[in-house]
Image (cartoon, rainbow over all chains, first blue to last red; front, side, top):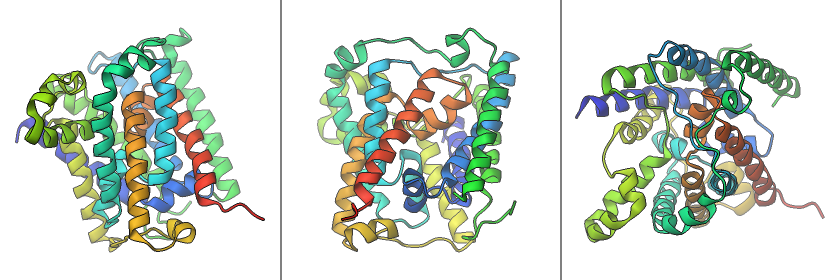
Length: 176
Length: 180
């Protein structure tokens, strides 16, 4: 294995371990969040984002690492986002957690993984059509909110933290 | 605030914060060791995996497909990450005895019964739709939800809001029987 592959494997093992310890990968937790009965996956995910964003902005400010925004291609993000949401609710896993769910013995994740492989193959076939239609509507490029509002990310980070902490108090108060 | 949950897991705020630290270490390590900053994601790996399968019986077709060409069919950092996720969850669940062979999950069973075939078809079709959506949106809850949100990417806010909104509406239709 190359260094790249070893690094990916180690990172994945730790990530999978934490996903499983957080109990966020199983069908009940994923669908529990979509039925707004159990917000565990959002507690987990938003906590990760809060901590991660501070380090990631410090590292990129120091010029050590680079940011890598995904393009704000309106048609693609909107239609893709809606399709993902619909599929997610039926499948009960997301791409990363399906692999983890299989690891903790959820055998039905195999069907989700097979479906996602077929979905990837279909997307590759549709790509020429999509890139000349949906993906060609309006692309704002690889931008962050900091670029969109021309404001320092260090102004946005505390606002994000405050909003998320407020949401956490709401979750705990409602017992979600 | 309890450190252990009722199901024997770790407090989700704590486990999530550790993932945040992992994400920081990971962007640093990939930059230092691979020369390019890599962010955690998962869905591109499904393109590469199915590309390997198609190469077996239609290698010319794969070579001529623009999307496979752009994605590059190889076992890269993210491919190993997805394999690692499986192993990490396996290790964690075996060591804390939460590993459970499950064919049909409880919420599904309440609504559609204990048929594995029904659950299989649902997971398969859901998987197809979700992956087409994830590739179109250029990310899933890992790539957009974690990595994109950590950088305050505009597209990730839109994508995550739509993942959730469409998911909530679909779940309400699929899992709740209408009263009356």
